[in-house]
Length: 160
Image (cartoon, rainbow, N blue to C red):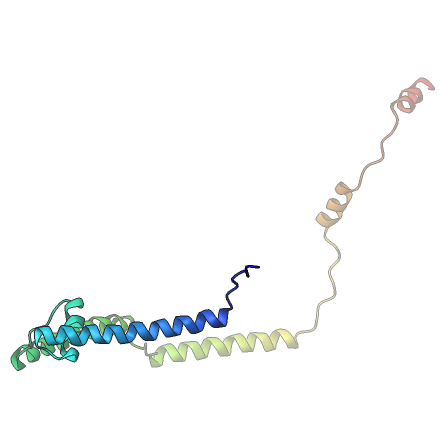
């Protein structure tokens, strides 16, 4: 009887790890052989391959070039910070100062208002006023008027 081939996931993972290890050793051997052909150690060749992928080797900058780049960057930052600081300073208005005459006017007006309030509180309270006629009329207008029947009105003159 033929058996069906069922693969256990643990066995497959172990096989994968073994193959990856074998692949790593093969790549290392290939790199060693290439370095022997060119005459460079393997470490240098891998570094050269990494720089070629990122765009090639860069030319070293002189001290004067680095200094000029740094000064230009500082100049740009100074201009940025100055432009950012100006609107904040311009938005802040100076404080206003109250003159002695204005303060005296305010005090006098306040004293006058308080005196009027105290006088109003001391005066005897007036008796409640009767309801105004306009209010009564409004109530009368809003109330529905009784409607007389037309037949009754016609019969009354005939009886005389």
